[in-house]
Image (cartoon, rainbow, N blue to C red; front, side, top):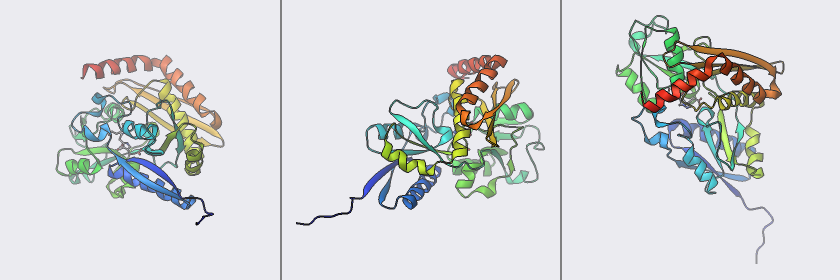
Length: 323
Ligand code: DPM
């Protein structure tokens, strides 16, 4: 007869997509959790999502809700995994019943970057030749860049980061637009040629931060993942997500944001753009940082009265027609 006094090692199962970027992010979370909770065992379970399988269709036409997250969510609801690590910008603002956003980690630079073909090493967005082809499949980037640089051409691009960079290097594009955070996490920060200023292009909601999702009310898991939360990033992202949720925009509409917190005050700037870049509706609100969600909702209402409604309705109709 043997008895043991130490508690059995608890195994926590972390769901992740299989892409290189997703795995880098998930291993980072796993390592952070291991350091803080050495008595637990953290196991990574990889899964493919719809967004990983459909590579030949422009993102905006597939429909957006949960493209990169659904399979990971099913895993948690079926009790096969306990938490899931996402790029926060890919996590829909309305989560399935039974799940919650349990943690927002510290944000990296949320801006977008221009990466150019080697023949344009001395150029910037402002100085690329007329007709230069820029690769992006983000409607948000497309609309804002078209607005500021009407002489550039834009072409869809899909695939993971390495595939996109290869297409650029082979000469299919003169430049491509990627998130600074993604390039940096993959150790490819040296490919960043120009960081795009917020005056030119506002970033996506949640860009640069990781979101950890778990079962709603799973206090044991929440206590673990809350240890990785970065309060300032969380407040900023809660304001951004409330703004997007209130506009009922999925992740594939031309909606951009920018946030900062100074002296307890949160400033949120948001924009809705028409696809041709002709119309940009933009405004800014400021208020106490602990009222983040209220600020997001307030900004959404401001933009609606300034014409955002009309633009969004047009875009949903255009996407449905498949144009
Ligand atoms: C979402 C968009 C894109 C990703 C749309 C947007 C970019 C698609 C494209 C919602 N998700 O930003 O307006 O350009 O074709 C994605 C990336 C990252 C997370 C890559 C990227 C890394 C950065 C981060 C794809 N999701 O934006 O270059 O963690 O914020």
